[in-house]
Length: 68
Image (cartoon, rainbow, N blue to C red; front, top):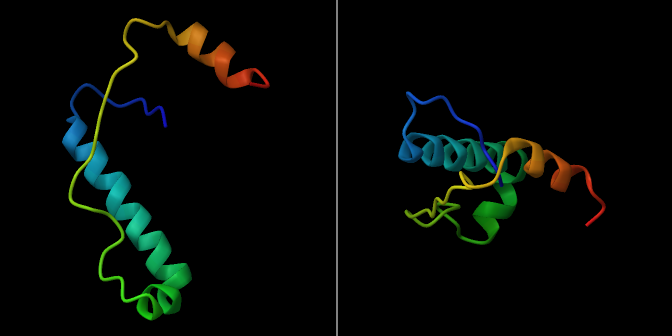
């Protein structure tokens, strides 16, 4: 996933928001399945973040638009 963030947001804040929103989405739509599987949380309390700062936005857009 490539995410563009505002400079005022930390990577930690973005990761937490994505994880919380994902948990909320799954809980709203698949609560019974989560209960059936005994899942109390969707994510492990960890994340990895890397950058693609050496690659231009134009190259990323070209790659996203390709069939590969």
